[in-house]
Image 1 (cartoon, rainbow, N blue to C red):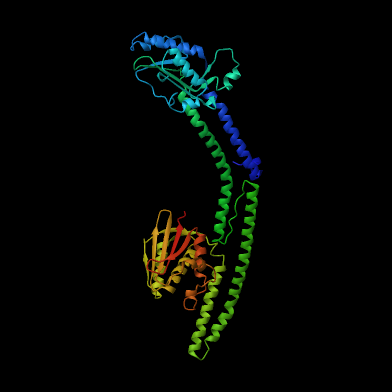
Image 2: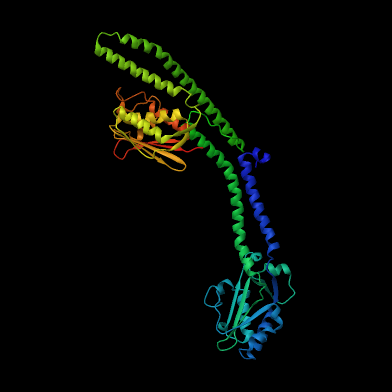
Length: 480
C-alpha cells in the first residue's frame, strides 16, 4: 500500500520519523503496561512497629510446640501485611549481614536495623538474618515494596529520596532463631502477581526491540527492494539486448536513480541497434559482389587457385550469414511454441555424426519444452558445431527435471582457459587457440547461442570437461 505523503519524503526525513515513531511506541507500551499489570504495592512500616511485631511473633512461637506454630502465627494482627513461616533449619539468603558485601552495601540504616532486631529479640547477631534488595526504579519491582520509616512524623518526599536513613527494599526478608534448630522467616505479604511482573520486565524490552526492529525492517525493505531491482536489471542488461525498465520507486532519490537507469538502457539499446543495423546492412550488401566473385572464380584456369578462391568466398559468405543472423531481430521476435527438445538434440547429433564428427546423445527420448523453436535449434546447432570444430568426439546429455531441462555438451578439444570464458561470448572474438581459418569461424557462434538461450529465460555456462576440453551447460526453464 502506497502512502502519498510518505512516498514523497526523502530518505533522511524517513529515518528521523521512524526513530521518533519507535521511541513513541516504546514509551506508549511502557505507560500502558501498568493498566494491564498493576504496579507493586508500597507498604510503609514504622520501624518500632516492625520490631514489636517481630518480638510478638517470637514470643507466640516459643509459647507453643513446633506443630502448633503455623496456627498461632496465622492469628497474628500483622498477618494482613506480613507472612510468617516457621522453618526447621537456617534459611539461605543471597546476602547476609556478616562475612560478605552486605555490611559494605548496607552500612547505613539496614545495618542499624539488623542490630536493633538482634537487641530487641535478645539474640546474637549471627542468629538474625536480614536481606533487603534495592532497585534503581522501584516501579519495575516484581514483589511489593517496603519502606521502613523512623518514628513519625516525616515528609513523604524525604521518605522516598533519603535511601540511607529510610529503608526502601523490593525484597525484604527477616529470619531469626526461635529454638535450637528452628527459625522464623518474615516477609511482606505477597499480592500474587510477582510472576506477571517478572514476565513484564522481560517482555517489555523484548517488545521494544521487536517494535523498533519491525519499523527498521519496513524502512530498510523500502530502500533495499529498489536496489535489488536495479541490481537485477543491471545483470540482465549485461546478457540481454532488450531493455527491462525498472518500476516506480517510493523514494525521490531512488526514483531519480531508476529514471537515470532506464534512460541509460534506452540509450544503450539505440546505440547497439544502430551498430547492428549498420553491420547487417553492410553484410547484406556484400552478398551481391560475393555472388559475382563466385561466378568469376568458376572460370579460373588453374584448379588449385579456383579451389582456394572458392574456399575464401565460402568463408566470407559464412561470415556474412552469421553477421546477418546476429544482427537480425526476427529470431528474438519469433513466437513461442512447444517442441520436443530430446528429438531436436538427437537430430542435431545425427547430423554432426553424418558430417564426420562422432556425436553421442545420452538422455530421455522425449522432453517437452515451450520456446522459440528456430532460435533454440540455432543455439544448440552452434554449440554442437563449436564442439566438433575443436574436438574429435562430442558427448551431448539431457536431464529433465520438473521445472527445468539441463543440456550438457562436452568435447575433448583444447578447452578454454577460465580467465577467457567471458571473452568467448563477445561478438567477433576468436581466442588465441583458434585463430585460424580452419576452426576460427566468425566469433559469433557462442554469442548467438547465449542470446537465444537468454531470450528463453535460460543460462549457459562454460567450464572444463571431465575428460579435458570444453563443457557447455545449458539450463532452460520449463514454461507453460
